[in-house]
Length: 201
Image 1 (spheres, rainbow, N blue to C red):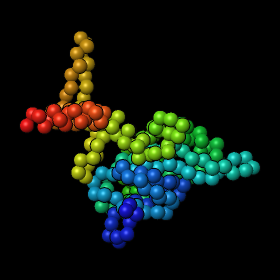
Image 2 (tube, one colour):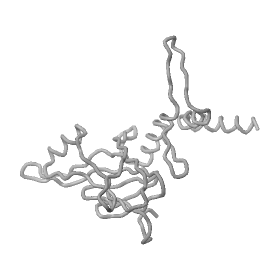
Image 3 (cartoon, helix red, strand yellow):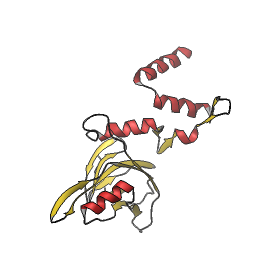
Image 4 (cartoon, helix red, strand yellow):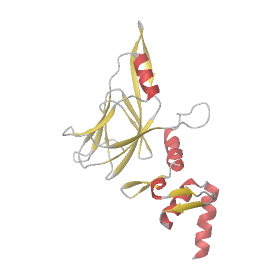
């Protein structure tokens, strides 16, 4: 269960106008004021801005595209917040331009570093209907995977370089290279690779 029921658990409190959908690959339906238990080490969370705003003389629901955050649990309770908007058109323009202020703070008001990226949707008519699937695709495409308490970015550990003659070279240890290609492989390719590994032993 993702919602915290233990007094000593480290949590992140979801701020106003924020809806949470995924935490570390699992569904996490949480809204403003809710607290979600974090795991030790690195965490990954998918959220959307969602609020009823003024649109001329009426009000209108604005819902942003989903965003994926990556940050490290500092053993202190955290809070996630986003700047407040009153008018629909201002929120729409700010999100279109990527000029939205998000923040993660601990209980002392200290800013916690994080990585933020817009999460691409799934192919088809309802691109954001299955956000855990969209996140899995995003992680696979970007060479991101969980290893113990850390989120690894294989694209940073393995560098692909192309020489002037067109020769492709990979830098990074052999294990990191294997992990990179494995995360990018299809289910059939992974199955064939596992069979090959067993045959080598």
